[in-house]
Structure formats: structure tokens, C-alpha cells
Length: 122
Image (cartoon, rainbow, N blue to C red; front, side, top):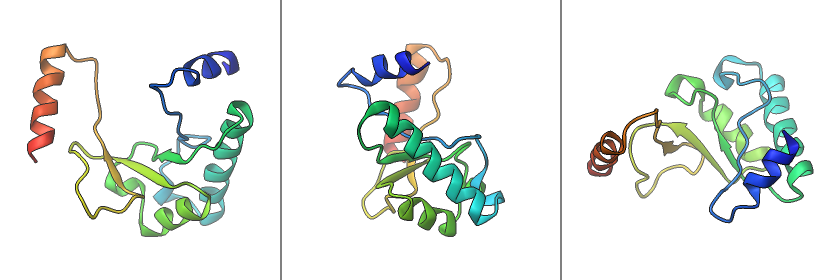
């Protein structure tokens, strides 16, 4: 797995971000659990990659899976940006700790294109 991660990370078109240790809905956890999930996941990835991992994607990522308190913990853990699962594009003035991330399934190119168009007009 380590070698695969390094191979993917070597591609300049790819950015590696953290997703937690245990794929937990952070809003449903005690602050200590949230802190461990954020910091240990970041530290593990950074140790393997040998560079900073500034991005976090909330597990599941729906609105009920994170909260303002969790967003603050993400910031304090050293992340610069966090992504939620919201089918739309980024708009000005949004919190960098709740940026939208469009969920992509195993769709045909035509269906993906249509969804991307719909996301961009919201």
C-alpha cells in the first residue's frame, strides 16, 4: 500500500489529502476522538510522503458529518482546507473548511458531463 501511495503521489496531477483513520462521522464523536482522527491521519500520510498534507475530506462528508466545532478542530490540526460532500462548485466567500466536493459514481462520460454542467449552474 505504501508503494502504491508513493506512486500515485508522484503524479503532478494528483493531490493527496487526509480522510481520517477510521472513516468516522466526526460530528458524532467526542473532541478527543476527532483530534486523534485528524492529527494521526495527517501525521501518517506526511511520514510516508515526506511532505505536508494540507487537505482534509470529511468522511461521508454530508452536512450532519461535520460541524463548526469540527471545522475548528480541522483548522487547529494544521489543515488549510477541508471538503464536504456537496454537489456544487466552490463559490466566493465560502469557509475553506467546508468546501464542496462533488460525489462521483461509476457513471458514463455522458452522465458525468451532464452532472458537471448541472453543478456549475447552481
